[in-house]
Image 1: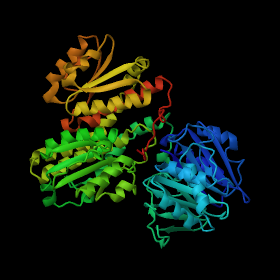
Image 2 (image 1 turned 45 degrees about the vertical axis):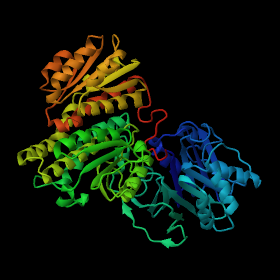
Image 3 (image 1 turned 180 degrees about the vertical axis):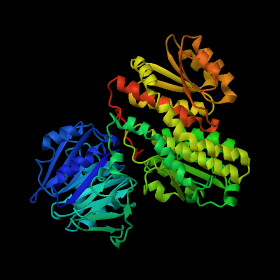
Image 4 (image 1 turned 30 degrees about the vertical axis):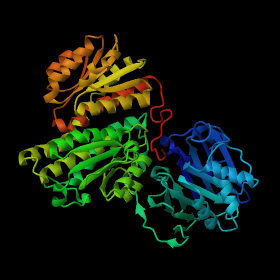
Amino acid sequence: MCGIVGYVGESQAAPILLDGLSKLEYRGYDSAGVAVFDGEKINVVKAKGRLQALRDLTQDGAGLKGYIGIGHTRWATHGEPSVTNAHPHYNQSHSITVVHNGIIENYQPLREKLISKGYEFCSETDTEVIAHLLDYYYKGDPKEAIFKVLHRVIGSYAFGIMFQDHPGKVFAVRKDSPLIVGVSEQGNYIASDVPAILKYTRDVYYIDNYELAELSMHEVHFYNQDCEEIIKEQVTVEWDVEAAEKGGYEHFMLKEIYEQPRAVESTISPRIKDGRIVIDELNMTPEEIKEIRRIYIIGCGSAYHVGMVGKYVLEKMTRIPVEVDLASEFRYRDPILEPNSMVIIISQSGETADSLAALRMAQSLGAKVLGIVNVVGSTIAREADNVMYTWAGPEISVATTKAYSTQLTAIYMLGILFGEVRNTLTEEEYEEKVKELRLLPEKIQQILGDKEKIQWFASKYANAEHIFFIGRGVDYAASMEGSLKLKEISYIHSEAYAAGELKHGTISLIEDGILTVAVSTQPDLYEKMISNTVEVKTRGAYVFALVSEDNQGMKEVGDFVVEIPHTDPCFATSLSVIPLQLFGYYVSVAKGLDVDKPRNLAKSVTVE
């Protein structure tokens, strides 16, 4: 959601803040602002709209002098997008300045209490309450004031704070919203995510809930909620700086689509040793794997779609019953977890609010939780009982591509491993699946080599109003992801349906010329899908058939056909999703939209 950057050091702060905020644009925002201490006072500049407006107001930072500051990109929750509601916020004397990612749930009673004590508010935000509360409690000790505020606040937050009385320091504290501290010889940093500071340092600390960081030019200190100093472990980020740059591609999304062969290979390679699947980080004995009675897969958005594929794949390979839940539904439906259950939480960022809450609920119900995440050191990675990293590298575009593909790969490997241990896969089946798994990067690359065909077709449907996706089994799950990709970046209404459900109402939506994307990669379901596709064609649909290369019947039915190479049917989604990603991307490009930063969306949903 919102992005936070802070700096104190030997260089001018404003250009660093603006650069860091530019690396967080993928999080989604509608306004931006920076606060810089010039040696006498804190100067705040804010702008509605894109970051470029703030750059123009500050002459790319040159107009704001000072070696310490905080910056923010805001995603509106309380109050409309405006300069007044943009962060940073401050107390009435402008001596305390705050940036915030999260939501203060009890801001209204706090606001009323402060008004009764003479405080005046100029914005509609929940964050301004924090600035005035800090002012109310501040008696010369910033840490004491901050912890007193935390005791009054209900909600999620990551705060970056400056006190004019302490001109050489930036303070940071968090609960349920991501925040890291970076250190270097030139100065120290706070940020919502690694890409914001990767240009300046790879040495970071991950702040845990209720921990406070105090940064000065050459020192960083950490404190627990009892205001006792604590020692934290420093982590070196392995990502290359170039991984967070476009590298000559027009958009991050296209770059990340093309990075999928490498990302999938990076997820597979370390976990295959002498031809066997070895997942050391799983920390489960064969006996524990055999005792699993049910698996629950939980995620949001595309991660939920990975779970849908996972249900088909894991049940087929392991014969363990699998339930898939949206995290926001799981946490509020009073779930019943069987004894010896395994819960898998899937999240790219590892900070997704609903998924994190579901993790904690599952643990409170006695379940062991495996986190499948991309971001090393993220909250889900730290709080899960075990974590399986996907090694996709930084994903900047809001619409996920390579993170989705690597999450699928992680699920496949779990299925193969569990199938071997539980003897639900024969040795021949096991070896064949490992072989096909290792071929996935090469086959994804093969599909990417035929992008011009999809680009041409996508340009014909840039003005479409409705597009439907149909499939059966894992192809239905792939259709859900294809539909989501299209709607989130092109703003075209699209829906995915299980093809067998068409006659139960949804076929009434088919009209002359409506594009229907029919995904058919499962040999056992070829004939059924041909029948379903003929049903929509006879009602006027134009069919984009996405098929396995041996599916001759669907090739004859489709009006426009894209083939994917042969693979194990369990792994077909990893190939079929590539043309669907490219289709959504090129439709958005043809419409002239902001592919990487679609309206109303954020990369990491860290609040409900």
